[in-house]
Image (cartoon, rainbow, N blue to C red; front, side):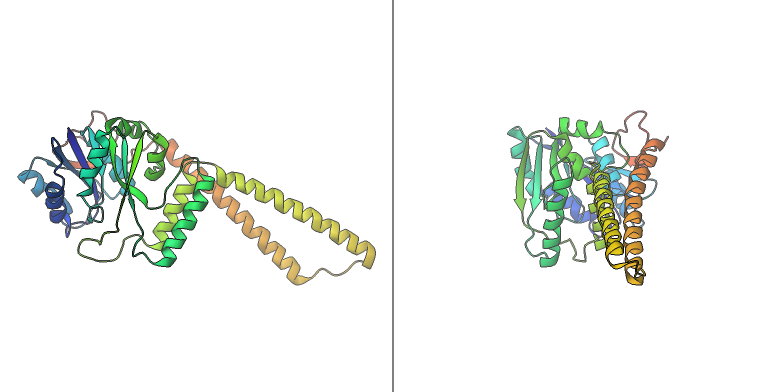
Length: 319
């Protein structure tokens, strides 16, 4: 069988040599031919140059280079598009996804599973971050149409039919964690311990990026926020009606009183804030429609080595 290993890369010159060496050293399943597909996502360091060197030395190393930074979702999409394997593994470049685990993934793939998913334990994570993550997944699984699991990311093996199903979805705003669940197919989960980043250093996932990623997860697969906005409006309308009745009764019993300043300001601030939140939810959905209607390609390939670009692909440039 041919196994494609897809690795999105952004400014990975410090780890790329170790990554290539470790992938070919660690993955040693019998009767498996390897191709390593590196996707350069607009790196500003020597990442592309190192990819070119590895491609010249070893034809099993192939690369696709974007015209600019399009983001990890686009890089994974490109890797899946140009990978030719009977099965495809997606993993990160920083070696926090242990390549040796791929051997076990292959075993379960041969048992008939279309998705073999690696689930990271949270050993060693800060307690606050772990609790926040668990709370998020409890919330999101009550809202979204597909199940999402804590600790499960992009590190997984996909069969060819699972890859083809993912590529058949042409949407621009991609949230791969949800798409992986949405396509279905038989799935097996492997737990693995948290790994240190190669060369140390802090995670690139800041709280701001995690928050945006979480919002994408909630809004990409359902209209629950819009439905919640309707419920919120109905509840507030009901409370306002009850309050008007209370004021009317109070005026009849005790006479007309001068309205309180604090009550007025609090009510205006509350309803103004709620209106802004609802408008923001509506704007987010309208913005996603805007990007989808434009029909722009999810990425543009500026250079490649060793891969065959699909004819007429919207992200292909003439070489």
